[in-house]
Image (cartoon, rainbow, N blue to C red; front, top):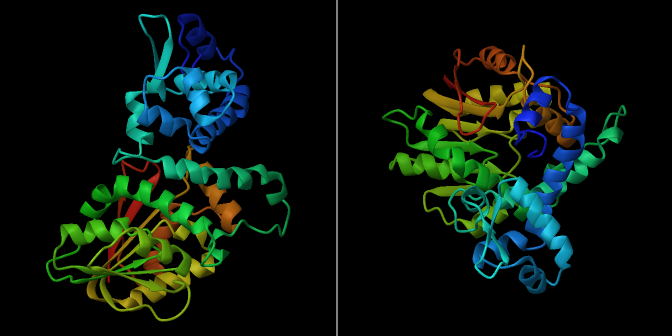
Amino acid sequence: MRLGLAPESFVERIGAWLGMVPAPLVHGFYGMAGSRVLMTALECGLVDALDRHPGQTGEQLATALCLDAAAIEHLVACLRTLAVVQTRTTRGGAAVHALSRSGARWLSSASPTCIADFLRFNAHQWRWWGELTQALEPGAAPFDLHAWSPEDIRWAEYTKAMHQLARLAAPEVCAKVPVGRTGTTLLDLAGGHGAFAAELCRRHPRLSATVLDLPGNNRVARELWAQPRIEWTDGNVLHGTLPQADIVTCFQLLGHLQRDERRALLVRMRAAVRPGGTLALMDHFASSGRDDASAFVALNYFLVARTPRLTVEEAARELREAGWATPRITPILRLPGQSLLCSRA
């Protein structure tokens, strides 16, 4: 059974259909194990070894990584179950391993769709989730990553992780942001990784962008990506007067804010956008009326900032209350569960 989610045999499929497979076991054990296997394979260098030198045996991989050969064989077997690794038998009877097509697409450092940095950052999120029981207590402190000092080395991991996910969706998202024929200035709030600002500037040659974000995020972005038409400005989007712009974007921030912070920011954004300008918001909104994976993302926001669930309907209503026109709501295919809200000043 592949992680208990896709039974391989007809008998297993029938058992799952009849409810004979204990679903809590599947989620509680296999979900935990699969997540930890992926993170460990990246942390110990196994994924990079499979990527750069495919066709090695488990013993060869273990020797190169200075790890236990039996442990590596176990890890490789789990990665096969996750469809990350493929194994073939040589004429001499040796089992050799390499990344599968899917594994290479998502985990190879040479792939434009690599998300390995995000999975590496999951090691931090793993610790947050490990203290979920304590987080249920009234007044428990959040795991506030935005409170890290600008020099904290975790900013590099965070910014790279967010950039990898954002660049996957940036072409789809930015194609749906109405810039207009006269728009020349973009203000990207909390977009320190720069993926969305860069894509909008690429699509609209007359556009220049200001990215307003925390110093730690901007420090990493300036070092990693040279963007001639993007200026990174240090600041906190929740405080001070926002610069004037024709287009204001704010992606994947609202879920981190309390209701009063969110509503105050929407009013300040309304004052920042020039007449006829555009506001584009995007987030992983909690679902209303159905149960899906958005519940886990909302809980992750709660662990980081202790924020309440925010639905897309609530966000649209708060936009109107802040003086914005009724927004156009568009789901993002590349980021399941996320929606883009666009409104005019």
